[in-house]
Length: 94
Image (cartoon, rainbow, N blue to C red):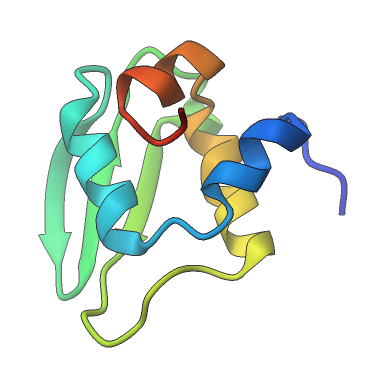
């Protein structure tokens, strides 16, 4: 599956093991994304500045599970579409 948003290899090497909690905290720190609602373990974030298909992302946080599979994480990040500077600002990469 080819994603419209290609994550550079050096960035992917640093974020491929990100946990759901780390992704959740990064979205909460990012002023472009606002927590819209909670439903069970799902946290729904909204960004009105994105095209309609990419305005909402759901992050499921499970305390017993660590991270995401690579395809799931790439799918979530293709919706979020952070730049390299944003990854650095959010302290997801060095």
